Length: 469
Image 1: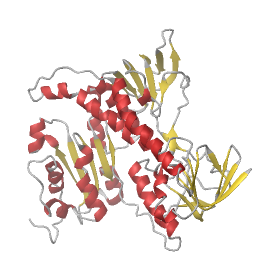
Image 2 (image 1 turned 45 degrees about the vertical axis):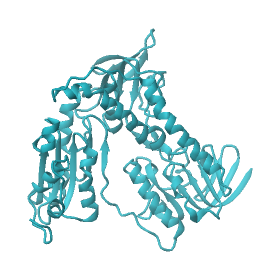
Image 3 (image 1 turned 90 degrees about the vertical axis):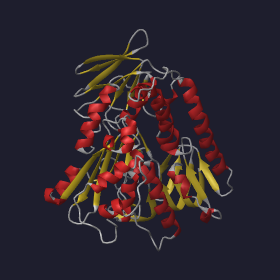
Image 4 (image 1 turned 30 degrees about the vertical axis):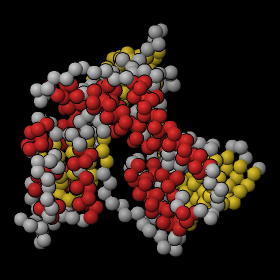
């Protein structure tokens, strides 16, 4: 067995790869990554999916233009060209990331699966053992394969594989009703596939604010077929190579099936339980406010975790923030920096686009009482730029504490939702009350951002001390 001693070991080369600052240039480091460098976001998540979202939105343009009395010729999506353009940019980034680390004289890259050896060690299947003074677990998550007969058939995909298809499917069935499923439903339907989404319950995006959720559930079926309250029972293969999806309500024939029922942390793959580390019920590592991993309820000095393997929010911006916290704490073990637990925004690049931060109206009422909650829902179509869009469905909802004007949450559906919400994200994280956020700055007229301004202006909250009337 080959043994090595290092100052720092990292499992995972997504956000974990960003930990290697200049501080580590004269120290020995090991980084273990069995897959491509860059993690989920770069290779199978945020970035390639959004690079598919944009062509899908362009493909919808002729229909959207009709509302503005513009006739555009029908186009067609060249799936192989779109796919190759996307991955010709992404794959070299992942490869270059690997080569850069592999060529660093003080970094040992372990390009295989590893398991934990105690709390500060790694072991590979090939017999390499790494002992580290400090260790960071950033091993991410993977797609859940539901317990449905036939999920192992050729033509059944997860989000990890569906973007590399040889050709655009004529018919696709998507199992799931959350972020990933709704994004791919918008992508494939936009590019021209006959798309059916199967959900077990009544609502798509059921955890969102009720008003936004209901609005989205009214809009999505205009673009693709949504089968509600449907249990997917099994998948079989037909003689012609197509797939048959058998549900509690009937059957659907498809060229491919995408199962998008969530992601699970990779704690089982690295042997976290065997190492005695504390786990949440869903398999995530338990960490304290400094991102230190707990064992027996106590933080293990020099053992940290970040990203999907420990976070409730499986979001790249959360992993990046946690990486900054961990990077500081690795370098300053006697002056640890805590995770701020700030409000975390998220966007779903489906059609229409969705965005959210903070409490829903229902959560706010439960927390501080109905009498203390003020809400305002601003329709996009009731602003000047909304007129330009002839928008009839977009809405921006903001939730605030009626007593002091603190913003508790915001929820958006419609064009550029992920951008419209950002001023509220800033206000919430910087502690700016709703009155000041609305009146303490100029808002460009007649920009779309007036949707956000008007939502804030419509809240019943106290007047701030310094904001102009």
